[in-house]
Structure formats: C-alpha cells, structure tokens
Image (cartoon, rainbow, N blue to C red):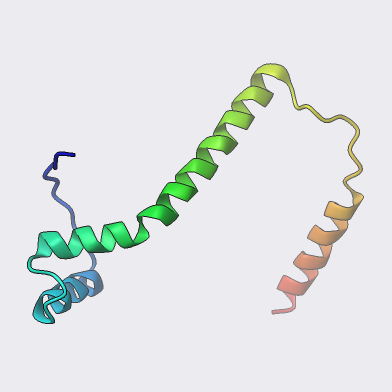
Length: 91
C-alpha cells in the first residue's frame, strides 16, 4: 500500500503527546507517532463507519420501500423515555 501526504492540525495536547512519544523513543518521527496513534484507534473507527453505513442503508431502504413495521406497541419505549427524562431533570 502506498502512502499519501496530508496536512493536519492537532490539539496542543495531542502535539505534546506526539513529542513525548518521540522523546521516549516510542516513535522516531512525528509522522511515525501520528501513524501509531491512528492505527491504535483504527479498528474502532472502522467499526463505527460500518455501523453508520448499515444505518444509512436501512434508512435508504425504508425511504424507498416504506418502514417494514406497522402498528408497533411503543408503550415500553415511551415509558422508558419518560422515566429517563424525569431522572435527567433531577440532576
């Protein structure tokens, strides 16, 4: 797989973390440090993307074909939502 150069802006905290990785010998360069950080979270991001794509696919199907469920009993969900809103308003 090839590589591609991109320019990014990072937070001060992340910049300090990258510098610390280099100082401690965890990474040899900023490039290597950033790539290590990206790879460490890559599977989590890929899973989020997969789930979001599935949601968008279902929504698209429902828009085209209609929602597959009719006359659902939503009382449990309504009650749960009401209970959560009461709990959150007490905070």
